[in-house]
Length: 168
Image: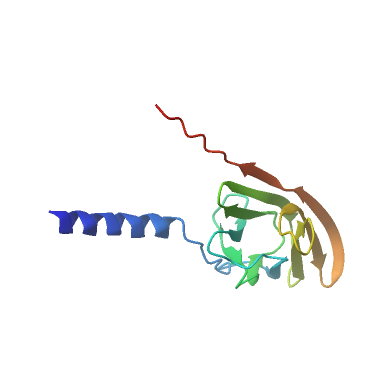
């Protein structure tokens, strides 16, 4: 009985983790396309007690195309083939967590690439200092064919959890 229960728990854990797994952005199957390179700068290296990830959300208006890939310290840049000549919804959410806190910074960007263009989206994590890895915000520079189009700013939000032990 105990052995079966352990197998069920492992299967449920694997299914749960796979549901939260990052997705791969597949190129559109038809229509004009463009190239999008997303790069996250200033990630903190993963440690035993802290983690930082960049969750990308990239979809067309009716969500018939798109995905939610993950960027991280060991993989801070990704290149995608995206539909051109149509509006796309793009957001990047930096998620940071550690002992007793979690937080993040989100930037939403309206994309509408022209056919065969090369877009570059540089997401920079702003920190208190080089010695202090506390996040204060984030910024995005969007370029098309090497020319800056627009800049965006995001504000960091941190939630600190305090545990109060109540003795009887």
